[in-house]
Image 1 (tube, rainbow, N blue to C red):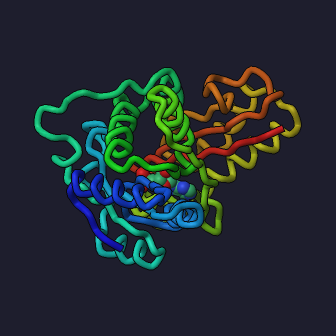
Image 2 (image 1 turned 90 degrees about the vertical axis):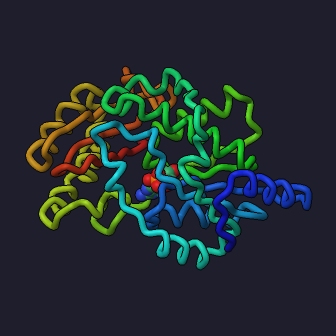
Image 3 (image 1 turned 90 degrees about the horizontal axis):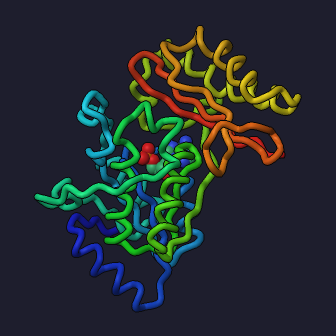
Length: 279
Ligand code: AMP
């Protein structure tokens, strides 16, 4: 596994692999890697001639009051995991490498950013599409691997790929969960013991929503019943929404299948989770 810091060097390396006819699989991350990341890496490893994993805590996707500074980092542990998974390149650029002085242009995340986390984290998806487009330009992968855990993010990036007609196959991998159902996340380390116990109510809320939807309870009623269930366990709820999985707009019927997505705070930690419920 070769660590690479310079974007120009990264491009040189992937271009030479491409000349050898290798298919590049790319997994973008913010590091502090866990089993969720590992599942993406393994899928990429299976499907690609060479795998690039980026570790970059992207400052432009954090709001001024968010956790950029205290976001968990552990470069040595990440590198050990990537080596074990036989990743070819660990791309860990500096902030200046991705955002050279004067490069203030940001991409528009489009209409999929209007709901769910969009209004709750102003500027977040603008930062996300901007950094992912820059990483794509540097790495020029044949396929990119994202987690369903960040469903809205994956859909926004998919739309960006279409908008720029990038020759990149988007692969969305299932959510990896702890044994008690909590979705794995680098932010779970923020949780105290009691917060961690309360957080178990999040996957249970999604299960409740699934049962209600199976019983054909209308979407708005599912939303308020799910909120009522979750409320006592968490400190605040940003949203619980039943949406169309394509448009991310409120689902009006259950015909096409729906996405139940939620965001809430347990203590000071913001957690997100979702479940796709197909017909
Ligand atoms: P992050 O490092 O949190 O930015 O995540 C990097 C990638 O890993 C994103 O595509 C996430 O959706 C994905 N990911 C994070 N947590 C999980 C999980 N529990 N299961 C599957 N994928 C995940």
